[in-house]
Length: 73
Image (spheres, rainbow, N blue to C red):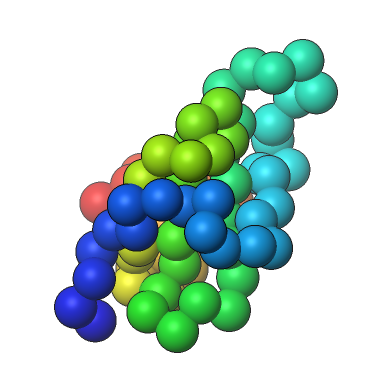
């Protein structure tokens, strides 16, 4: 994977909010599934801002650790 960020995340469609996001406009993280370079992640309050792209395996490990309630390493 060469690109670790996407300068204008609004250029991509299909973003979904975290299931932990509230409907009151609080802190929200959005992810994009199926991107060829990994898993793009952005701040939903800044849709035209950048997105960070994480390797798929790293993102999966992160989510699994969150779900398990274990330490993030």
